[in-house]
Amino acid sequence: MGSYVLVDRIGHTAIITLDHPPANTLSRALLSGLRHCLDELSGDSSVRSVVIAGRGESYFSAGLDIAALAEATRGEVECLLDEFVALLESVRHFPGVTVAALNGYALGAGLELALACDYRVAEQGALLGMPEARLGLSPCGGSSRLLPDAVGMAWAKRLLLGGERVGADLAWRIGLVDEAVESGFAKIVAISLANRVNRQGPQAVAVTRSLLEAGRDATLAEQLQHERAAFLALLGSDEQHEGGQAFLEKRPPAWSDEEGDEGDDG
Image 1 (cartoon, rainbow, N blue to C red):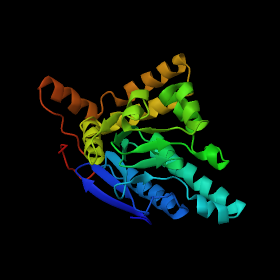
Image 2 (image 1 turned 90 degrees about the vertical axis):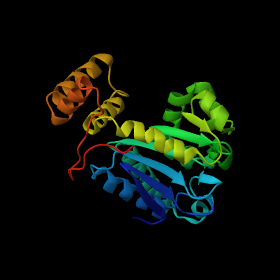
Image 3 (image 1 turned 30 degrees about the vertical axis):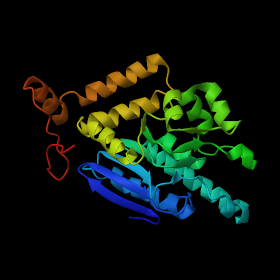
Image 4 (image 1 turned 30 degrees about the horizontal axis):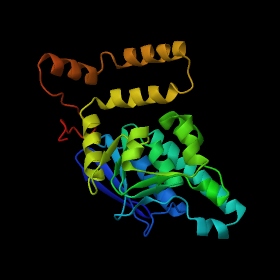
């Protein structure tokens, strides 16, 4: 579907594989291909979740290509950073759920890509870190905000300022990932997490994740008004009717997409 990006489908879940060996570094071509892929999938109502993984057994992504950065002009670097930020926005605004399956090293911008996802699953052997300061650089994909939210300020400083790297188990204990699993199981567990969301009402999921994003900058009073408006907008919809009837009839709801396909095989 795009340069350095492979896409497979399992039911309502799209599995996107970063395919830029050996370390799945985030070149401009990969960033552009991944963003366009996500934008296309976001317009497909039959796709309710996305799993992002890295090709191979050693790397999710090592982040930006430092060797390429050293040879790039300032203007080329600025374009690369703009593409990276645009990609992260596409991840955050995907209407369904996004899950990062960390099958190996997730470093720098690679970890920031994972942080943009809703869930993160790391398998044994994965190593997560932010090496920018050691390279004389600072983060560029929101980790100075997202890491303190995820792990607290103390661990954020250890990762960003001290350059510490953490394995799957420690990453789970400090809240950097949502699951720590055996080697080879990150993608399987990520798909399982995605399938849980696939069983929810698609419109309700899209609206609720928009509320979560808006809530970052809203007061409680403002958020209550946003939630009230969203609740009333969903009330009486076909989706809400089906969800209510399914509850009363003690059966799984049968959601419909644009193609008329009903149900969920997840």
